[in-house]
Image: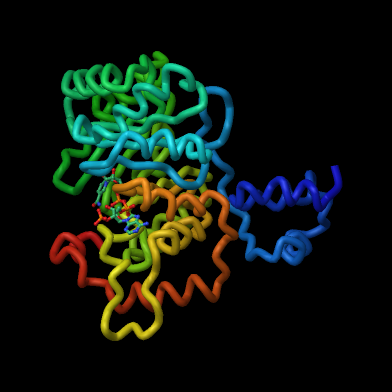
Length: 318
Ligand SMILES: NC(=O)c1ccc[n+]([C@@H]2O[C@H](COP(=O)([O-])OP(=O)(O)OC[C@H]3O[C@@H](n4cnc5c(N)ncnc54)[C@H](OP(=O)(O)O)[C@@H]3O)[C@@H](O)[C@H]2O)c1
């Protein structure tokens, strides 16, 4: 295959590979040479860690449940190449129903992410059974320990018989494939990254909420750990603009692309509530990576609107 062809076929997946990937596979002598060729501002990043059962890496845009969402979103997302689906619990009916029919034919091609905020082994077990049954899959791909926060007893979460130990044991028994954790707290996020039992962390990250990422992402990159970003649109509010911002406000697509420009972020969740929204967001799967200038542009906007979103919740967990 010619170098150009390889890049052209690769452009369907704009996740930027490692320097070594480029130099070995594409024949570029330096990453800079590759960047010149692609016209992208490539940054070496964590290679995709999450893989479907048939070995395909997670695609950069995942579909997340949203109340009132139609299950058609799942079919449409799958047909467009989305392979990661997330729902919090039974309320994610659109995604659950969509997955339920999808897994009958395509189980090995999709990653199912869900989880529980329970801190007890029996509570976790009940949720796993319920969610497994709901989507019709014996094995769940990623199971998250949810809402980890400073009020948690550390032993209850990280101890030998705690939440993480329970999930790691499930992984060992083949009941789940990856152990996940989600938190808004920087110290807990760092503890999760340092815990070898945890495969993936899910964190709030967007144009306005960059503070946690500033501390946590370098660690994630160093440890080559997967990060899933959520609240890319900051509960949809980033799309509204603000009086001090004279330029156009970001679209949802801009918000997802912003998150994906962070090298530690393996995929970003989109909780598109309609088929029309999903259609507008799907180009994130293939869009060229944001350049530094565009990134800075959106960060200036994020700085302006920071603190105007969800009151104390937003400010308490920056
Ligand atoms: N948000 C949180 O604090 C939080 C915390 C933990 C987990 N989660 C979970 O994470 C998942 C992702 O949620 P998220 O908040 O991160 O999703 P998101 O994709 O950042 O936001 C989804 C919202 O953005 C708006 N939107 C998306 N695409 C749009 C488009 N093309 N045009 C116009 N508006 C568009 C919609 O608002 P409208 O509905 O107003 O149209 C939609 O409800 C969900 O399953 C959620 O349960 C969220």
